[in-house]
Image (cartoon, rainbow, N blue to C red; front, side, top):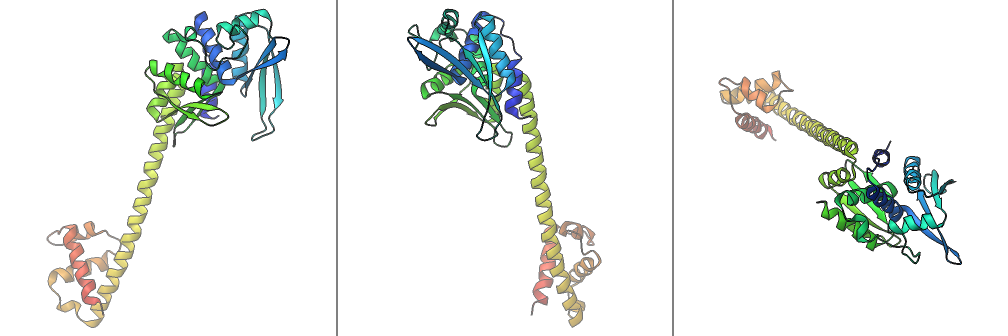
Amino acid sequence: MSLSEDLRHELAAITPRSECDRLAELSGLFHSAGSVHLKGRGEVSVHLDVGDPAVTRRAFSLLRAFDVVSEIRTYARHAFTGGTRYQLHVAGDDRALQVLYEAGVLTSRLTPLERPPRRVVARSCCRAAYIRGTLLGGGSLSGPRSPHLEIRSAGVDGADFLARIAEEEGVRLGVLDRGRHAVAYAKGIETIADTLALAGASGTVLLFEERSVMAATRSRANRLANADHANLVRTSRAAHDQLRAVERLRRSGELAKLPARLQEIAELRERHPTLSLRELALKCRPPATKASAHRRLRKLQELASP
């Protein structure tokens, strides 16, 4: 299951305690995933289009709590994954239109609003519920390598509104216009975690942070393993060159004429071809430093050069 699905399922299981929170969540759902259809003669209907059955059930439950009748329909999505999509069709009867007006989805003249009026998100709990609704309807979460959270909106005005109410709760979201739609987004683990916590998705926050820690640990382990492998390759090549130099000096008889320290490091390299410079240095008598061992071996290579 993806992080986006984990997020939607956790949020869909939250039951708002007060009517104002239910109204704000409903508003967020319709502003992120809803559309208004004019049927002529002043009649309208509203559709909610989502890709998750858990979100569909949550929206259906919210509408029923306000005594609004809705019909659930499904259709196959032909593009991309070809998965099933879910639509809630809300007929434009008097009760439905009244609730949608109170939720700031429609004006009193039945025209769609890109963002709700201030009264819908006047309280802190309502702002959190509205953000939860927008995440249910148009949120996506990815990570942990490149953590990114975005919430889709029909236009820039709606995304700006979402960013403003999030900032009132101490969370800063960016806004991006993508032409056909706009998004409010967050990058970075801390900002994403704050946004999810504000909406009530504490479980997803823990899961997201756990995956981030695991990914960082795995990445560090890979870097260390790669570095160790590179060091081993370099050490092996250097030791091979040093052994060849010692062999040339021994064949020519020059090795026996060299100072005792150079003869000692040459013999140690022959006896221990896989040891590192530090390990060779510690076997010298008296023990030498790594730099000293390196200088002595380099001197042997210089002497052995044609």
